Image (cartoon, rainbow, N blue to C red):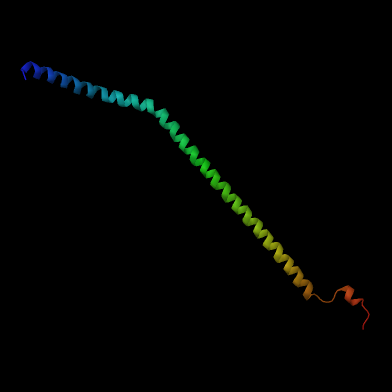
Length: 103
């Protein structure tokens, strides 16, 4: 390897590293400004997916709550009917029984 080759290689390396040192921040800023809208769009898309999943879960929870309220209403209605029946059983003789002639 001659000294001319060495100097040529050294000058190529210096030019490469100087160019890399200058172009790296420029490329980084360019990439940041070019990729920022893409990343924001992707983030909004991911949030909308999560929102859709949350809506599905919320709909399921509401349906379960509605079913629970319906079951509770049925249970209360049954209890009221039982209470009314027991009240009629324990009530004194009605007017119809009082009008019957004694045997």
